[in-house]
Amino acid sequence: MVGGGATLNVRGVRASATVAAVYGFFLLFAQFAFVELIRAAGRGHTEEKVLLGVMALAGVAAGFITAWRGAHPSMIRRALVAAALSSALAPISGNMPGALAVAALTGSALGVSTVALAALLPGWCGLPWVGLGTGIGYAVCNLPFVFQQSPAHQSWIAAGLAIIGALVMPESAAWKQQGEKPNTLPFPAAVLLFTALVWMDSAAFFIIQHAADLKSATWGAGHLWRNAALHLVFAVISGLCLHRGARRLVPLAAWGLLAVASLCVNSASTRDIAGLFYPAGVSLYSVALVAWPGWLSGAPDSKSAAWRAAWLFAVAGWFGSANGIGMAQTLQRVPAGFIAIAGVVLLLALLRFNRSHMRPALAVAAVTACGLPATKQASPSQATAAQRGRIIYQSEGCIHCHSRYSRPGSPDESIWGPAPDPKTVLAEQPVLIGNRRQGPDLTNIGARRSEAWLKAHFLNPSALYQGSVMPSYAHLFADGRGDDLVRFLKESGIESTAQLMGSQSIWNPIGSALEYDAKALFARHCAACHGVDGMGKGPLANQFLIPPANLRDGPFIRTQAADDLETAIARVIKFGVIGSDMPGHETLTDGEILALARMLREWRH
Image 1 (cartoon, one colour):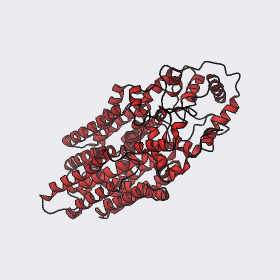
Image 2 (tube, one colour; image 1 turned 135 degrees about the vertical axis):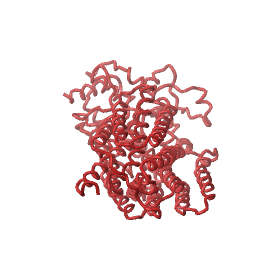
Image 3 (cartoon, one colour; image 1 turned 180 degrees about the vertical axis):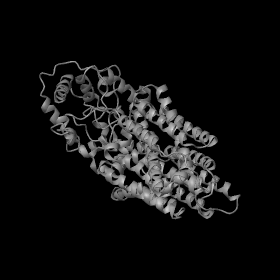
Image 4 (tube, helix red, strand yellow; image 1 turned 135 degrees about the horizontal axis):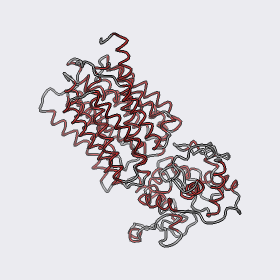
Protein backbone atom coordinates (compact mmCIF):
# COMPACT_ATOMS: atom_id res chain seq x y z
CA MET A 1 0.00 0.00 0.00
CA VAL A 2 1.06 3.54 -0.67
CA GLY A 3 1.20 5.75 2.41
CA GLY A 4 -0.82 3.39 4.63
CA GLY A 5 -4.40 2.16 4.56
CA ALA A 6 -5.98 5.51 5.46
CA THR A 7 -4.24 7.28 2.57
CA LEU A 8 -5.25 4.53 0.18
CA ASN A 9 -8.88 4.84 1.25
CA VAL A 10 -8.85 8.59 0.74
CA ARG A 11 -7.41 8.08 -2.73
CA GLY A 12 -10.08 5.48 -3.43
CA VAL A 13 -12.83 7.89 -2.39
CA ARG A 14 -11.38 10.63 -4.60
CA ALA A 15 -10.95 8.24 -7.53
CA SER A 16 -14.54 7.04 -7.11
CA ALA A 17 -15.80 10.63 -7.06
CA THR A 18 -13.85 11.38 -10.24
CA VAL A 19 -15.41 8.39 -12.02
CA ALA A 20 -18.85 9.57 -10.88
CA ALA A 21 -18.17 13.09 -12.15
CA VAL A 22 -16.90 12.00 -15.58
CA TYR A 23 -19.68 9.53 -16.29
CA GLY A 24 -22.35 11.68 -14.66
CA PHE A 25 -21.35 14.51 -17.00
CA PHE A 26 -21.41 12.14 -19.98
CA LEU A 27 -24.87 10.78 -19.18
CA LEU A 28 -26.53 14.00 -18.08
CA PHE A 29 -25.16 16.41 -20.68
CA ALA A 30 -23.78 14.56 -23.70
CA GLN A 31 -26.56 11.97 -23.84
CA PHE A 32 -29.52 14.00 -22.55
CA ALA A 33 -29.36 17.75 -22.15
CA PHE A 34 -27.35 18.62 -25.27
CA VAL A 35 -29.66 16.60 -27.51
CA GLU A 36 -32.74 18.21 -25.96
CA LEU A 37 -31.23 21.69 -26.37
CA ILE A 38 -30.63 20.93 -30.06
CA ARG A 39 -34.26 19.94 -30.52
CA ALA A 40 -35.63 22.81 -28.44
CA ALA A 41 -33.75 25.21 -30.73
CA GLY A 42 -35.77 23.82 -33.64
CA ARG A 43 -32.83 22.29 -35.47
CA GLY A 44 -33.67 19.77 -38.16
CA HIS A 45 -32.68 16.12 -38.22
CA THR A 46 -29.70 16.83 -40.47
CA GLU A 47 -28.28 19.50 -38.17
CA GLU A 48 -28.74 17.22 -35.17
CA LYS A 49 -26.81 14.43 -36.91
CA VAL A 50 -24.04 16.85 -37.83
CA LEU A 51 -23.68 18.10 -34.26
CA LEU A 52 -23.63 14.62 -32.74
CA GLY A 53 -21.23 13.47 -35.47
CA VAL A 54 -18.86 16.32 -34.66
CA MET A 55 -19.00 15.37 -30.97
CA ALA A 56 -18.20 11.72 -31.78
CA LEU A 57 -15.32 12.55 -34.15
CA ALA A 58 -13.84 14.97 -31.62
CA GLY A 59 -14.14 12.34 -28.90
CA VAL A 60 -12.44 9.63 -30.94
CA ALA A 61 -9.63 11.96 -32.06
CA ALA A 62 -9.03 13.30 -28.53
CA GLY A 63 -8.94 9.76 -27.13
CA PHE A 64 -6.20 8.67 -29.54
CA ILE A 65 -4.20 11.86 -28.95
CA THR A 66 -4.38 11.18 -25.21
CA ALA A 67 -3.09 7.62 -25.73
CA TRP A 68 -0.28 8.88 -27.98
CA ARG A 69 0.86 11.52 -25.50
CA GLY A 70 0.43 9.32 -22.44
CA ALA A 71 -2.23 9.74 -19.75
CA HIS A 72 -1.58 12.15 -16.89
CA PRO A 73 -3.87 13.51 -14.14
CA SER A 74 -3.47 17.08 -15.41
CA MET A 75 -5.10 15.98 -18.68
CA ILE A 76 -8.23 14.88 -16.86
CA ARG A 77 -8.35 18.08 -14.82
CA ARG A 78 -8.11 20.30 -17.92
CA ALA A 79 -10.61 18.14 -19.78
CA LEU A 80 -13.15 18.41 -16.94
CA VAL A 81 -12.78 22.20 -16.86
CA ALA A 82 -13.38 22.24 -20.63
CA ALA A 83 -16.40 19.97 -20.14
CA ALA A 84 -17.83 22.34 -17.54
CA LEU A 85 -17.32 25.27 -19.91
CA SER A 86 -19.03 23.52 -22.82
CA SER A 87 -22.12 22.51 -20.83
CA ALA A 88 -22.40 25.92 -19.14
CA LEU A 89 -22.33 27.66 -22.53
CA ALA A 90 -24.65 25.21 -24.31
CA PRO A 91 -27.98 26.82 -23.24
CA ILE A 92 -26.89 30.21 -24.62
CA SER A 93 -25.23 28.94 -27.80
CA GLY A 94 -28.21 29.66 -30.01
CA ASN A 95 -26.67 29.68 -33.49
CA MET A 96 -25.21 26.74 -35.40
CA PRO A 97 -21.54 27.82 -35.09
CA GLY A 98 -21.96 28.08 -31.32
CA ALA A 99 -23.59 24.64 -31.15
CA LEU A 100 -20.78 23.17 -33.27
CA ALA A 101 -18.20 24.64 -30.90
CA VAL A 102 -20.02 23.13 -27.90
CA ALA A 103 -20.23 19.74 -29.64
CA ALA A 104 -16.53 19.73 -30.51
CA LEU A 105 -15.45 20.89 -27.03
CA THR A 106 -17.71 18.33 -25.33
CA GLY A 107 -16.45 15.46 -27.49
CA SER A 108 -12.82 16.46 -26.97
CA ALA A 109 -13.27 16.73 -23.20
CA LEU A 110 -14.94 13.33 -23.02
CA GLY A 111 -12.31 11.71 -25.24
CA VAL A 112 -9.47 12.94 -23.04
CA SER A 113 -11.12 12.35 -19.67
CA THR A 114 -12.47 8.84 -20.35
CA VAL A 115 -9.28 7.46 -21.91
CA ALA A 116 -6.94 9.04 -19.34
CA LEU A 117 -9.18 8.01 -16.45
CA ALA A 118 -9.39 4.37 -17.60
CA ALA A 119 -5.60 4.25 -17.92
CA LEU A 120 -4.81 5.85 -14.54
CA LEU A 121 -7.43 4.18 -12.32
CA PRO A 122 -5.30 1.11 -11.41
CA GLY A 123 -2.76 3.43 -9.80
CA TRP A 124 -5.47 5.12 -7.74
CA CYS A 125 -7.87 2.47 -6.50
CA GLY A 126 -9.29 -1.02 -6.78
CA LEU A 127 -12.22 -2.35 -8.81
CA PRO A 128 -14.83 -1.93 -6.03
CA TRP A 129 -14.17 1.83 -6.05
CA VAL A 130 -14.73 1.89 -9.83
CA GLY A 131 -18.08 0.17 -9.32
CA LEU A 132 -19.07 2.66 -6.63
CA GLY A 133 -18.09 5.67 -8.76
CA THR A 134 -19.93 4.43 -11.85
CA GLY A 135 -23.01 3.66 -9.75
CA ILE A 136 -23.01 7.12 -8.17
CA GLY A 137 -22.72 8.72 -11.62
CA TYR A 138 -25.79 6.83 -12.89
CA ALA A 139 -27.71 7.33 -9.64
CA VAL A 140 -27.22 11.11 -9.61
CA CYS A 141 -28.56 11.39 -13.16
CA ASN A 142 -31.69 9.45 -12.18
CA LEU A 143 -32.55 11.48 -9.09
CA PRO A 144 -35.96 13.11 -9.71
CA PHE A 145 -34.74 16.64 -8.98
CA VAL A 146 -32.00 16.14 -11.61
CA PHE A 147 -33.79 13.98 -14.20
CA GLN A 148 -36.84 16.25 -14.33
CA GLN A 149 -34.96 19.53 -14.70
CA SER A 150 -35.05 21.51 -17.94
CA PRO A 151 -32.21 20.84 -20.42
CA ALA A 152 -30.62 24.18 -19.49
CA HIS A 153 -30.61 23.35 -15.77
CA GLN A 154 -29.31 19.84 -16.49
CA SER A 155 -26.46 21.42 -18.45
CA TRP A 156 -25.51 23.57 -15.48
CA ILE A 157 -25.73 20.60 -13.11
CA ALA A 158 -23.44 18.68 -15.46
CA ALA A 159 -21.01 21.61 -15.38
CA GLY A 160 -21.03 21.42 -11.58
CA LEU A 161 -20.26 17.68 -11.70
CA ALA A 162 -17.31 18.31 -13.99
CA ILE A 163 -15.90 21.00 -11.67
CA ILE A 164 -16.29 18.69 -8.67
CA GLY A 165 -14.39 16.00 -10.55
CA ALA A 166 -11.56 18.41 -11.40
CA LEU A 167 -11.27 19.45 -7.75
CA VAL A 168 -11.35 16.05 -6.06
CA MET A 169 -9.39 13.84 -8.47
CA PRO A 170 -6.25 12.19 -7.05
CA GLU A 171 -2.73 13.05 -8.09
CA SER A 172 -0.47 10.67 -9.97
CA ALA A 173 0.42 7.33 -8.37
CA ALA A 174 2.56 4.35 -9.30
CA TRP A 175 0.74 2.26 -11.91
CA LYS A 176 0.60 -1.45 -11.21
CA GLN A 177 -0.33 -4.15 -13.70
CA GLN A 178 -3.71 -5.44 -12.64
CA GLY A 179 -5.01 -8.91 -13.21
CA GLU A 180 -3.22 -12.04 -14.36
CA LYS A 181 -3.32 -13.54 -17.80
CA PRO A 182 -6.03 -16.18 -17.11
CA ASN A 183 -8.41 -13.38 -16.04
CA THR A 184 -7.88 -11.08 -19.01
CA LEU A 185 -10.17 -10.58 -21.99
CA PRO A 186 -8.10 -10.35 -25.19
CA PHE A 187 -8.54 -7.27 -27.33
CA PRO A 188 -10.63 -8.75 -30.22
CA ALA A 189 -12.98 -10.47 -27.78
CA ALA A 190 -13.37 -7.35 -25.63
CA VAL A 191 -14.14 -5.11 -28.61
CA LEU A 192 -16.79 -7.52 -29.94
CA LEU A 193 -18.27 -8.11 -26.50
CA PHE A 194 -18.63 -4.47 -25.48
CA THR A 195 -19.68 -3.31 -28.96
CA ALA A 196 -22.53 -5.84 -28.88
CA LEU A 197 -23.64 -4.69 -25.42
CA VAL A 198 -23.42 -0.97 -26.18
CA TRP A 199 -25.16 -1.46 -29.56
CA MET A 200 -28.02 -3.41 -27.97
CA ASP A 201 -28.35 -0.99 -25.03
CA SER A 202 -28.29 2.11 -27.27
CA ALA A 203 -30.96 0.73 -29.59
CA ALA A 204 -33.21 -0.28 -26.68
CA PHE A 205 -32.64 3.05 -24.92
CA PHE A 206 -33.55 5.07 -28.03
CA ILE A 207 -36.71 3.03 -28.66
CA ILE A 208 -37.88 3.30 -25.04
CA GLN A 209 -36.98 7.00 -24.82
CA HIS A 210 -39.09 7.86 -27.88
CA ALA A 211 -42.13 5.68 -27.17
CA ALA A 212 -44.18 7.39 -24.47
CA ASP A 213 -45.80 4.20 -23.14
CA LEU A 214 -42.47 2.41 -22.83
CA LYS A 215 -40.74 5.41 -21.29
CA SER A 216 -43.33 6.03 -18.60
CA ALA A 217 -43.17 2.39 -17.47
CA THR A 218 -39.38 2.17 -17.23
CA TRP A 219 -38.01 5.57 -16.17
CA GLY A 220 -41.16 7.58 -15.69
CA ALA A 221 -41.49 10.04 -12.82
CA GLY A 222 -42.68 7.38 -10.37
CA HIS A 223 -39.69 5.12 -10.94
CA LEU A 224 -36.72 7.48 -10.69
CA TRP A 225 -35.74 6.84 -7.07
CA ARG A 226 -35.96 3.10 -7.69
CA ASN A 227 -33.83 3.35 -10.82
CA ALA A 228 -31.20 5.43 -9.04
CA ALA A 229 -30.95 2.79 -6.31
CA LEU A 230 -30.77 -0.09 -8.81
CA HIS A 231 -28.00 1.60 -10.78
CA LEU A 232 -25.96 2.16 -7.63
CA VAL A 233 -26.48 -1.31 -6.16
CA PHE A 234 -25.71 -3.25 -9.35
CA ALA A 235 -22.70 -1.10 -10.20
CA VAL A 236 -21.25 -1.89 -6.77
CA ILE A 237 -22.07 -5.58 -7.30
CA SER A 238 -20.33 -5.46 -10.68
CA GLY A 239 -17.17 -3.96 -9.16
CA LEU A 240 -17.09 -6.59 -6.42
CA CYS A 241 -17.67 -9.45 -8.86
CA LEU A 242 -14.93 -8.22 -11.19
CA HIS A 243 -12.63 -7.89 -8.20
CA ARG A 244 -13.30 -11.52 -7.28
CA GLY A 245 -12.54 -12.75 -10.80
CA ALA A 246 -16.01 -13.07 -12.40
CA ARG A 247 -14.78 -11.20 -15.45
CA ARG A 248 -16.74 -13.13 -18.06
CA LEU A 249 -19.83 -13.73 -15.96
CA VAL A 250 -20.49 -9.99 -15.50
CA PRO A 251 -20.98 -9.08 -19.21
CA LEU A 252 -22.95 -12.28 -19.80
CA ALA A 253 -25.25 -11.45 -16.87
CA ALA A 254 -25.58 -7.90 -18.18
CA TRP A 255 -26.72 -9.20 -21.56
CA GLY A 256 -29.21 -11.53 -19.87
CA LEU A 257 -30.74 -8.70 -17.82
CA LEU A 258 -30.91 -6.37 -20.84
CA ALA A 259 -32.42 -9.15 -22.96
CA VAL A 260 -35.19 -9.81 -20.43
CA ALA A 261 -35.82 -6.08 -20.06
CA SER A 262 -35.98 -5.56 -23.85
CA LEU A 263 -38.46 -8.40 -24.31
CA CYS A 264 -40.61 -7.42 -21.33
CA VAL A 265 -40.84 -3.74 -22.26
CA ASN A 266 -42.73 -4.63 -25.46
CA SER A 267 -45.76 -5.83 -23.51
CA ALA A 268 -47.82 -3.65 -21.18
CA SER A 269 -48.27 -6.55 -18.73
CA THR A 270 -44.52 -7.07 -18.18
CA ARG A 271 -43.11 -3.53 -18.35
CA ASP A 272 -42.65 -3.40 -14.58
CA ILE A 273 -40.10 -6.21 -14.95
CA ALA A 274 -38.32 -4.27 -17.68
CA GLY A 275 -38.04 -1.26 -15.38
CA LEU A 276 -36.23 -3.41 -12.81
CA PHE A 277 -33.90 -5.33 -15.13
CA TYR A 278 -32.81 -2.55 -17.50
CA PRO A 279 -30.87 -0.33 -15.03
CA ALA A 280 -29.33 -3.45 -13.46
CA GLY A 281 -27.98 -4.69 -16.79
CA VAL A 282 -26.68 -1.28 -17.84
CA SER A 283 -24.75 -0.80 -14.60
CA LEU A 284 -23.21 -4.30 -14.72
CA TYR A 285 -21.61 -3.88 -18.14
CA SER A 286 -20.78 -0.17 -17.71
CA VAL A 287 -18.44 -0.93 -14.81
CA ALA A 288 -16.75 -3.67 -16.84
CA LEU A 289 -16.35 -1.26 -19.77
CA VAL A 290 -14.60 1.30 -17.54
CA ALA A 291 -12.44 -1.39 -15.92
CA TRP A 292 -11.30 -3.36 -18.99
CA PRO A 293 -8.36 -1.17 -20.18
CA GLY A 294 -6.61 -1.09 -16.78
CA TRP A 295 -7.61 -4.40 -15.17
CA LEU A 296 -8.92 -6.88 -17.76
CA SER A 297 -6.83 -6.23 -20.87
CA GLY A 298 -3.44 -7.40 -19.60
CA ALA A 299 -1.91 -3.96 -20.24
CA PRO A 300 1.64 -3.77 -18.77
CA ASP A 301 1.60 -0.01 -18.11
CA SER A 302 -0.63 3.08 -18.25
CA LYS A 303 0.36 3.98 -21.81
CA SER A 304 -0.67 0.55 -23.10
CA ALA A 305 -3.88 0.80 -21.09
CA ALA A 306 -4.58 4.21 -22.67
CA TRP A 307 -4.20 2.80 -26.18
CA ARG A 308 -6.56 -0.05 -25.33
CA ALA A 309 -9.04 2.44 -23.87
CA ALA A 310 -8.85 4.67 -26.95
CA TRP A 311 -9.62 1.77 -29.29
CA LEU A 312 -12.32 0.28 -27.09
CA PHE A 313 -14.17 3.55 -26.52
CA ALA A 314 -13.89 4.52 -30.21
CA VAL A 315 -15.33 1.23 -31.50
CA ALA A 316 -17.64 0.06 -28.73
CA GLY A 317 -18.52 3.48 -27.26
CA TRP A 318 -18.87 5.92 -30.13
CA PHE A 319 -19.37 3.54 -33.09
CA GLY A 320 -21.50 0.96 -31.26
CA SER A 321 -23.76 3.62 -29.76
CA ALA A 322 -24.22 5.47 -33.06
CA ASN A 323 -25.12 2.26 -34.91
CA GLY A 324 -27.59 1.16 -32.26
CA ILE A 325 -29.39 4.51 -32.35
CA GLY A 326 -29.26 4.63 -36.16
CA MET A 327 -30.89 1.23 -36.54
CA ALA A 328 -33.64 2.10 -34.05
CA GLN A 329 -34.73 5.43 -35.56
CA THR A 330 -38.11 4.19 -36.86
CA LEU A 331 -38.85 1.45 -34.33
CA GLN A 332 -41.50 1.52 -31.61
CA ARG A 333 -40.67 -1.84 -30.03
CA VAL A 334 -37.36 -3.61 -29.32
CA PRO A 335 -36.94 -6.39 -31.93
CA ALA A 336 -36.10 -9.86 -30.63
CA GLY A 337 -33.55 -10.09 -33.45
CA PHE A 338 -31.48 -7.32 -31.85
CA ILE A 339 -31.31 -9.30 -28.61
CA ALA A 340 -30.37 -12.53 -30.40
CA ILE A 341 -27.62 -10.90 -32.46
CA ALA A 342 -26.02 -9.28 -29.42
CA GLY A 343 -26.19 -12.60 -27.57
CA VAL A 344 -24.57 -14.57 -30.38
CA VAL A 345 -21.75 -12.01 -30.72
CA LEU A 346 -21.26 -12.01 -26.95
CA LEU A 347 -21.01 -15.80 -26.74
CA LEU A 348 -18.61 -16.02 -29.66
CA ALA A 349 -16.42 -13.34 -28.11
CA LEU A 350 -16.29 -15.22 -24.81
CA LEU A 351 -15.38 -18.51 -26.48
CA ARG A 352 -11.91 -17.09 -27.24
CA PHE A 353 -11.11 -19.04 -30.39
CA ASN A 354 -7.59 -20.43 -30.31
CA ARG A 355 -7.10 -20.25 -34.07
CA SER A 356 -6.08 -16.76 -34.97
CA HIS A 357 -7.62 -16.93 -38.43
CA MET A 358 -11.07 -17.36 -36.88
CA ARG A 359 -11.03 -13.90 -35.31
CA PRO A 360 -11.29 -11.91 -38.56
CA ALA A 361 -14.07 -14.26 -39.66
CA LEU A 362 -15.86 -13.65 -36.38
CA ALA A 363 -15.59 -9.88 -36.80
CA VAL A 364 -16.94 -10.05 -40.36
CA ALA A 365 -19.82 -12.30 -39.27
CA ALA A 366 -20.68 -9.95 -36.38
CA VAL A 367 -20.69 -6.84 -38.57
CA THR A 368 -22.80 -8.62 -41.20
CA ALA A 369 -25.26 -9.83 -38.59
CA CYS A 370 -25.56 -6.36 -37.06
CA GLY A 371 -26.47 -4.98 -40.48
CA LEU A 372 -29.36 -7.38 -41.05
CA PRO A 373 -31.94 -5.54 -38.88
CA ALA A 374 -31.24 -2.27 -40.68
CA THR A 375 -31.61 -3.97 -44.07
CA LYS A 376 -34.86 -5.57 -43.03
CA GLN A 377 -36.18 -2.31 -41.61
CA ALA A 378 -35.39 -0.52 -44.86
CA SER A 379 -37.44 -3.01 -46.88
CA PRO A 380 -40.47 -1.26 -48.38
CA SER A 381 -42.61 -4.33 -47.69
CA GLN A 382 -42.39 -3.79 -43.90
CA ALA A 383 -44.55 -0.92 -42.67
CA THR A 384 -43.20 1.47 -40.07
CA ALA A 385 -45.21 2.49 -37.02
CA ALA A 386 -46.14 5.78 -38.74
CA GLN A 387 -47.28 3.94 -41.86
CA ARG A 388 -49.44 1.62 -39.78
CA GLY A 389 -50.76 4.64 -37.91
CA ARG A 390 -51.81 6.26 -41.18
CA ILE A 391 -53.94 3.23 -41.99
CA ILE A 392 -55.52 3.39 -38.53
CA TYR A 393 -56.19 7.12 -39.04
CA GLN A 394 -58.23 6.19 -42.11
CA SER A 395 -59.98 3.16 -40.64
CA GLU A 396 -61.08 5.01 -37.49
CA GLY A 397 -62.67 7.78 -39.58
CA CYS A 398 -60.49 10.60 -38.25
CA ILE A 399 -60.83 12.26 -41.67
CA HIS A 400 -64.51 13.01 -40.97
CA CYS A 401 -63.78 15.46 -38.14
CA HIS A 402 -60.22 16.66 -38.70
CA SER A 403 -58.64 18.39 -41.67
CA ARG A 404 -54.99 18.05 -42.59
CA TYR A 405 -54.57 21.19 -44.68
CA SER A 406 -53.72 24.61 -43.27
CA ARG A 407 -54.93 26.94 -46.00
CA PRO A 408 -52.20 29.28 -47.32
CA GLY A 409 -52.74 33.01 -46.89
CA SER A 410 -55.61 32.52 -44.44
CA PRO A 411 -55.98 32.80 -40.65
CA ASP A 412 -55.29 29.06 -40.59
CA GLU A 413 -51.57 29.73 -40.67
CA SER A 414 -51.64 31.86 -37.51
CA ILE A 415 -53.68 29.19 -35.70
CA TRP A 416 -52.51 25.83 -37.05
CA GLY A 417 -49.10 26.65 -38.48
CA PRO A 418 -47.61 26.94 -41.98
CA ALA A 419 -49.44 25.60 -45.00
CA PRO A 420 -48.03 22.49 -46.68
CA ASP A 421 -46.99 22.30 -50.32
CA PRO A 422 -50.17 21.43 -52.31
CA LYS A 423 -48.19 19.11 -54.56
CA THR A 424 -47.03 17.10 -51.56
CA VAL A 425 -50.57 16.87 -50.19
CA LEU A 426 -52.07 15.77 -53.49
CA ALA A 427 -49.34 13.16 -53.97
CA GLU A 428 -50.53 11.23 -50.89
CA GLN A 429 -52.26 7.90 -51.47
CA PRO A 430 -55.01 8.41 -50.50
CA VAL A 431 -55.25 12.15 -49.96
CA LEU A 432 -56.20 12.92 -46.33
CA ILE A 433 -57.11 16.61 -46.57
CA GLY A 434 -60.42 15.98 -44.82
CA ASN A 435 -63.92 17.04 -45.75
CA ARG A 436 -64.82 19.18 -42.73
CA ARG A 437 -63.23 20.60 -39.61
CA GLN A 438 -65.18 19.78 -36.48
CA GLY A 439 -61.98 19.28 -34.52
CA PRO A 440 -58.58 20.99 -34.79
CA ASP A 441 -56.58 20.89 -38.00
CA LEU A 442 -53.80 18.27 -37.81
CA THR A 443 -51.41 19.55 -40.50
CA ASN A 444 -48.64 20.40 -38.05
CA ILE A 445 -49.83 18.43 -35.04
CA GLY A 446 -46.44 16.71 -34.65
CA ALA A 447 -44.78 20.04 -33.94
CA ARG A 448 -47.60 21.33 -31.74
CA ARG A 449 -48.19 18.34 -29.43
CA SER A 450 -46.01 15.79 -27.64
CA GLU A 451 -46.53 12.03 -27.82
CA ALA A 452 -47.49 11.91 -24.15
CA TRP A 453 -50.16 14.60 -24.65
CA LEU A 454 -51.54 12.89 -27.77
CA LYS A 455 -51.88 9.60 -25.92
CA ALA A 456 -53.54 11.25 -22.90
CA HIS A 457 -55.99 12.95 -25.25
CA PHE A 458 -56.87 9.70 -27.03
CA LEU A 459 -57.44 7.97 -23.69
CA ASN A 460 -59.77 10.64 -22.26
CA PRO A 461 -60.39 13.73 -24.43
CA SER A 462 -62.87 15.37 -22.06
CA ALA A 463 -60.31 15.28 -19.23
CA LEU A 464 -58.11 17.66 -21.22
CA TYR A 465 -60.92 19.68 -22.83
CA GLN A 466 -64.11 19.95 -20.83
CA GLY A 467 -67.10 19.37 -23.05
CA SER A 468 -65.09 17.75 -25.85
CA VAL A 469 -67.27 15.74 -28.26
CA MET A 470 -64.37 13.52 -29.28
CA PRO A 471 -64.86 9.92 -28.05
CA SER A 472 -62.22 7.97 -26.15
CA TYR A 473 -59.95 5.72 -28.21
CA ALA A 474 -58.49 3.88 -25.22
CA HIS A 475 -59.29 0.54 -26.86
CA LEU A 476 -56.67 1.20 -29.55
CA PHE A 477 -53.86 1.00 -26.99
CA ALA A 478 -54.72 -2.53 -25.92
CA ASP A 479 -52.99 -4.00 -28.99
CA GLY A 480 -50.53 -1.27 -29.98
CA ARG A 481 -52.69 0.44 -32.62
CA GLY A 482 -52.95 3.55 -30.47
CA ASP A 483 -49.17 3.86 -30.29
CA ASP A 484 -48.94 3.58 -34.08
CA LEU A 485 -51.58 6.28 -34.49
CA VAL A 486 -49.68 8.56 -32.10
CA ARG A 487 -46.47 7.98 -34.08
CA PHE A 488 -48.23 8.90 -37.36
CA LEU A 489 -49.54 12.14 -35.88
CA LYS A 490 -46.20 12.93 -34.23
CA GLU A 491 -44.48 12.76 -37.63
CA SER A 492 -47.12 15.03 -39.21
CA GLY A 493 -45.63 18.48 -39.71
CA ILE A 494 -42.69 17.93 -37.36
CA GLU A 495 -40.50 19.76 -39.87
CA SER A 496 -42.44 22.97 -39.19
CA THR A 497 -41.15 23.16 -35.57
CA ALA A 498 -38.62 25.92 -36.28
CA GLN A 499 -41.17 28.03 -38.16
CA LEU A 500 -43.72 27.68 -35.38
CA MET A 501 -41.14 28.75 -32.80
CA GLY A 502 -40.32 31.76 -34.94
CA SER A 503 -44.01 32.71 -35.13
CA GLN A 504 -44.30 32.36 -31.37
CA SER A 505 -41.40 34.74 -30.75
CA ILE A 506 -43.03 37.62 -32.68
CA TRP A 507 -46.73 37.10 -31.91
CA ASN A 508 -48.45 39.70 -29.74
CA PRO A 509 -52.09 39.47 -28.61
CA ILE A 510 -54.55 42.16 -29.72
CA GLY A 511 -57.78 42.69 -27.85
CA SER A 512 -59.31 43.34 -24.47
CA ALA A 513 -59.32 41.00 -21.50
CA LEU A 514 -62.04 42.83 -19.60
CA GLU A 515 -65.03 40.87 -20.91
CA TYR A 516 -63.67 37.41 -20.02
CA ASP A 517 -63.76 35.41 -16.79
CA ALA A 518 -60.16 34.28 -16.36
CA LYS A 519 -60.96 31.90 -13.48
CA ALA A 520 -63.57 30.07 -15.56
CA LEU A 521 -61.18 29.86 -18.51
CA PHE A 522 -58.45 28.48 -16.27
CA ALA A 523 -60.79 25.87 -14.77
CA ARG A 524 -61.79 24.67 -18.23
CA HIS A 525 -58.47 24.73 -20.07
CA CYS A 526 -55.67 24.58 -17.46
CA ALA A 527 -56.76 23.06 -14.15
CA ALA A 528 -56.62 19.45 -15.38
CA CYS A 529 -52.82 19.64 -15.46
CA HIS A 530 -51.88 22.63 -13.29
CA GLY A 531 -54.56 22.16 -10.63
CA VAL A 532 -57.30 24.61 -9.69
CA ASP A 533 -54.79 26.52 -7.55
CA GLY A 534 -52.12 26.58 -10.27
CA MET A 535 -49.59 24.69 -8.14
CA GLY A 536 -48.97 22.02 -10.81
CA LYS A 537 -50.83 19.21 -9.05
CA GLY A 538 -53.81 18.69 -11.36
CA PRO A 539 -55.47 15.26 -11.81
CA LEU A 540 -53.52 14.62 -15.04
CA ALA A 541 -50.14 15.87 -13.78
CA ASN A 542 -48.72 12.37 -13.20
CA GLN A 543 -49.32 11.34 -16.81
CA PHE A 544 -46.39 13.43 -18.03
CA LEU A 545 -42.69 12.76 -17.45
CA ILE A 546 -41.99 16.43 -16.67
CA PRO A 547 -44.68 17.63 -14.26
CA PRO A 548 -46.73 20.72 -15.18
CA ALA A 549 -45.26 24.01 -14.01
CA ASN A 550 -46.14 25.55 -10.66
CA LEU A 551 -47.74 28.74 -12.01
CA ARG A 552 -47.76 30.49 -8.65
CA ASP A 553 -44.13 30.49 -7.59
CA GLY A 554 -42.30 27.87 -9.66
CA PRO A 555 -39.78 28.72 -12.40
CA PHE A 556 -40.97 29.33 -15.96
CA ILE A 557 -37.91 27.47 -17.21
CA ARG A 558 -38.97 27.01 -20.83
CA THR A 559 -40.73 30.31 -21.43
CA GLN A 560 -39.23 32.32 -24.28
CA ALA A 561 -38.04 35.83 -23.55
CA ALA A 562 -40.43 38.72 -24.25
CA ASP A 563 -40.65 42.45 -23.54
CA ASP A 564 -42.80 41.78 -20.48
CA LEU A 565 -43.96 38.80 -18.45
CA GLU A 566 -47.60 39.09 -19.55
CA THR A 567 -46.65 38.79 -23.23
CA ALA A 568 -44.35 35.85 -22.49
CA ILE A 569 -47.16 34.04 -20.66
CA ALA A 570 -49.63 34.84 -23.43
CA ARG A 571 -47.34 33.30 -26.03
CA VAL A 572 -47.08 30.10 -24.03
CA ILE A 573 -50.87 29.90 -23.65
CA LYS A 574 -51.32 30.46 -27.38
CA PHE A 575 -48.59 28.17 -28.74
CA GLY A 576 -47.68 25.92 -25.81
CA VAL A 577 -44.03 25.07 -25.18
CA ILE A 578 -42.85 23.37 -28.32
CA GLY A 579 -40.80 20.27 -27.52
CA SER A 580 -42.56 19.72 -24.18
CA ASP A 581 -45.92 18.32 -23.02
CA MET A 582 -47.42 21.83 -22.64
CA PRO A 583 -50.00 22.23 -25.46
CA GLY A 584 -51.09 25.39 -27.17
CA HIS A 585 -54.63 26.78 -26.96
CA GLU A 586 -54.97 27.86 -30.56
CA THR A 587 -58.75 28.29 -30.55
CA LEU A 588 -58.86 30.83 -27.72
CA THR A 589 -59.35 34.43 -28.74
CA ASP A 590 -56.69 37.04 -28.04
CA GLY A 591 -58.93 38.50 -25.34
CA GLU A 592 -59.29 35.14 -23.59
CA ILE A 593 -55.54 34.57 -23.76
CA LEU A 594 -54.89 38.06 -22.34
CA ALA A 595 -57.33 37.43 -19.50
CA LEU A 596 -55.52 34.24 -18.53
CA ALA A 597 -52.07 35.82 -18.91
CA ARG A 598 -53.05 38.76 -16.74
CA MET A 599 -54.36 36.51 -13.99
CA LEU A 600 -51.19 34.39 -14.02
CA ARG A 601 -49.00 37.48 -13.98
CA GLU A 602 -50.86 38.72 -10.90
CA TRP A 603 -50.31 35.34 -9.24
CA ARG A 604 -46.57 35.85 -9.61
CA HIS A 605 -46.60 39.09 -7.58
